[in-house]
Length: 172
Image (tube, rainbow, N blue to C red; front, side, top):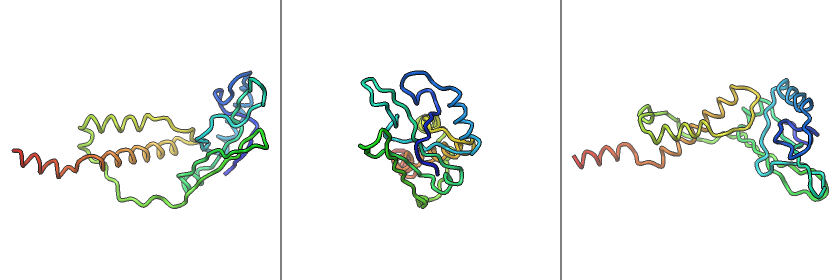
């Protein structure tokens, strides 16, 4: 894990105004790809540095970078900013957990695909934005886990199939 001030930004939207240094962005992104790193999003702040002027320039310079091994070992890593008053940069808190949540076996039911509500839920979960990943395999893993969590939550909230079948038999 690499945490800190990298003095460069990755994307155009990470600088609020002024000229963008495209060469610097390309170099930094190439370095991140070369080392197969993933950028853990800082969830509670868009920019991490400003120039303390009346009309400040805001830039995201501080970040948390992890490799694939870290992502597999600590899949639930999150980062947030902490208050800092003595610097023009921010403090970053990183929360990680090695223990995978204990859960029962998940089985996707084919009849869910016949339900418009379930199809829409799966599609929304799949399309929802995500952070930038170093590899497509990591992105696929992330999206599948998110769909599984969404479908599992939806399935638990709806009436059990057996209860619905019993009610139908009672009515018939």
